[in-house]
Amino acid sequence: MSARGEPRGFSPGRVGAMLLRYLYLLRSSWPRALELVYWPAIQMVLWGFTSQFLMTNSSYVARAGGVLLAAVMLWDVMFRGQLGVCVPFLEELWSRNLGHLFVTPLRPYEWMIALLSMSLIRVLIGVGPAMLLAIPLYHYSIFSLGPPLLAFFLLLLAMGWGLGLMVDAMLLRHGLGAESLAWLAVFLLAPASAVYYPVSVLPSWLQDVAFLLPSAHVFEGMRAVMFQHVFRLDHFIAAALLDAVYLTLGGAIFLYAFRGARRRGALLMVGE
Amino acid sequence: MRRVSRPVIEVSALTKRFGATLAVDGIDFAVPAGTTAALLGGNGAGKTTTLSMLLGLLLPTAGRIRIFGEDMLRHRYRVLPRMNFSSPYVDLPHRLTVRQNLTVYGRLYGIAGLGARIEALAQDLQIADFLSTQTGKLSAGQKTRVALAKALLNAPELLLLDEPTASLDPDTGDWVRGYLERYRERSGATILLASHNMAEVERLCSEVMMMREGRIVDRGSPRALIRRYGRETLEQVFLEIARADGRGAELRAAP
Image 1: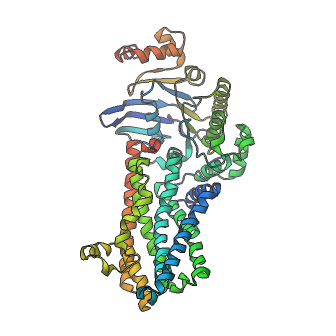
Image 2 (image 1 turned 135 degrees about the vertical axis):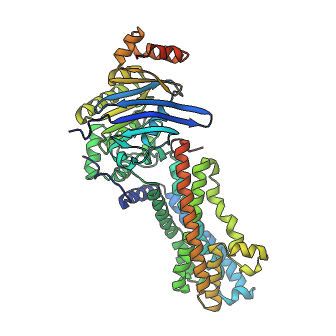
């Protein structure tokens, strides 16, 4: 019995092994699986009622019913995307498993790809039901956005991934003492992301900041589709380019932090 | 047939510094193929730090590590599939069942016929009855056997063990030692272990490196060390070295 040769490069099999590990974890605890669906669904219900109220009391919402619901669901794509990269990572810290993982031929970038893949699965499990539930509850289907929905989904997911990798790097550097970052980091960007209001309502200095966030471009683009029925290519391109920067930066910082952890001996020790 | 004739592990001038602390201080050693060697020393002597560097989990500050003739710092992915590691201080994930853990690690090593391999190891290590149990619910002895199963999944030619029988009752400890002896004889593998257990080291090892304050202060077979220090057991040798001021121990070292 022996290993299949000496793996020298990227191995989808090892990425699959890590994905399997996270799926086993998800399957082993129904409360955790339920939690994935719970918050997005509750958020959707709350914002659904708020939207119904504002439909008759706000000309802004009345002009495009579902704008708040679409916003909250897409925001959740980014939040869950970021959390989806961080929670499986935290699972390794909680179980102090890095010392086992990295004496195998697993490469850090393979682990990173597994984390991103798991994030996509968690987002689909979490946000998908909320999107479907909104149809019978509020007669609003986010799928009515058409093909731009796919673009918005992928752009926000990619931003969540970039942020998630940066948070993971912080966790590698500072251990579980920085755990709360995984849940809080993305909310720092919420005001400037202009999720529920146009960027134009922000102070001018914050508008400059907002347009450095892919999310602000996505939500502006979403409102353009809903209010003006146009797909704003300028926002799409800006968001895609910024995402490329966020992802590259996130990946680079993650790999740098991993090397730092090897220098400090943190792979064996990281925890509280 | 052995793949290499040179020593499986060759370490030269290996140094690790954590800030102002010199954890490993320019050590040199080699472990020949098919032997069992031990790093022996008190807490903080540098044993686990040395093992971590051999595993690639920790980057040395200076020095060189060659395993199977490969530079571990540059080509560790050529080496890692041929070695494995077990430590009672690094548990396998608790919430996965034993079979799930072994499946994940088997896939990470790209083991062909993984199901059959797990079944064979389960029989061999007497863990078949709790393959479906969550790893966190096992006793210390059961966890040790499961950790050993994980460490043997890829039939490693080099096995690194950090205190393999720590916190085990004497019966289970003896069983593990017996198993390791049989594994080495059967597979021709090389084993390097870090231990505090002198009886274990006397039984298993043909070569011992005594560490103190990050340095190897003496080395030799257990019998040669006992003779050199004029003692009756390796434990007495260990105590003399551990309590010496460093110079004393090194003065006794063989030229």
